[in-house]
Length: 102
View (cartoon, rainbow, N blue to C red):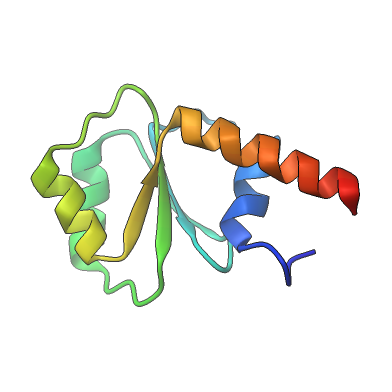
């Protein structure tokens, strides 16, 4: 199954994902590894600025977080794609359909 889906899909589809209800969660695109959970975007941006991430990452963010255009550009430059609550639900629904076929 992991050969067909990026790791983040499996991580986001897991019912245990974000049980702590963090406002932001940084996840590896291919690996699905959770790199960190953050309460504020300032915490996320500070962490990202200090660590050289070479691989693409996905960042779930809750409806409480509002990014500016410059922050989104900064994340994009760092190869981080953002996923909001609606997109998370779409990923989960799609994954459930795929898992039911396997």
